[in-house]
Length: 362
Image (cartoon, rainbow, N blue to C red; front, side, top):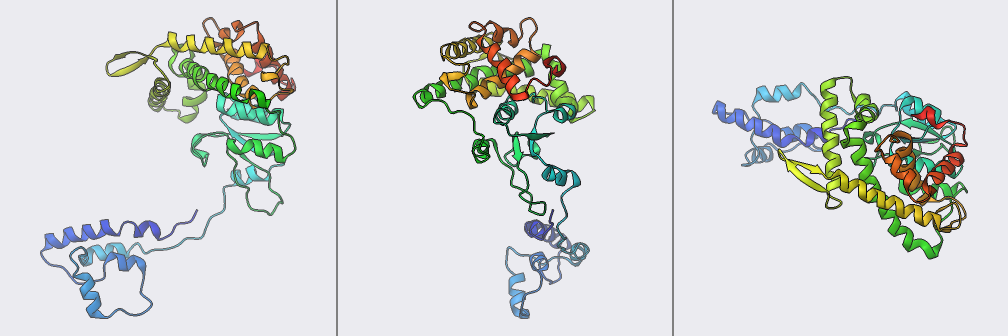
């Protein structure tokens, strides 16, 4: 991290306003260099006194009283040397594996278990199916350059090479192709159809997951375990964070369609029945297109692709963590003739090689 004079230069106007206040209060002032000249340092050539007086007399630039000038003189501008990265950051870039930053617990990340966040699990699955080994590290959105997870830190080219540039999900497919292990693409004839069905994942399934996790009180234990408890040990901070997450989830759901049930005490209430009904219809449609594909993968592809990863990210989490009565897992099991359940099991076996029992991930 580097501290420069830019920060101080950005506040000269505020300092001059303070000086103006003191000058007016005292009724008189002492001619002296302004704070801008103080922060910018001496000029290459000495400025004539007349010129200095003219600049000090400008209506928008007041001379600074000596007490205030001495106060700022006590905090001289200094440029500090850049510091090294923390040891944990150096370790992340020196591993023998590429590092994938996801929402996860330390124990699950150490074991390579699936992330509990659908967006992270989609790309974790993609890399697993592509045969690209990664090292998982639990993280948060604040650690990401794009403001969201996941992101990937590739391997160093050499031990002494600079830290590699993090990759966003939009670059994962190109990264897999560069490694020579891309997944199967959707057949060109089904590309437009795949885009239409992708909207069923991005809206109805996502809305159902948001409602079930954040707004359904039956799943508060999952919300606390995954998001609020790791953030703080204070019950007051956890309550505040839980409230913020629920309001954000409501806003996300309401902006995607007519899901407003009522407004009580100034708060919008989401129509849970409508949300779950749309999700059930979306799951039925996805099960139907998978059943008619003629293969075990969507749209007749010869192997799994990014669309399969997108579907698995929701069906896996719904069936593993919300399999109880009235849970989303039941909707997945009832969809079609069990195509989505079989698809979820096959993707898990291929991606995680059956080395972990799903019951251990609950």
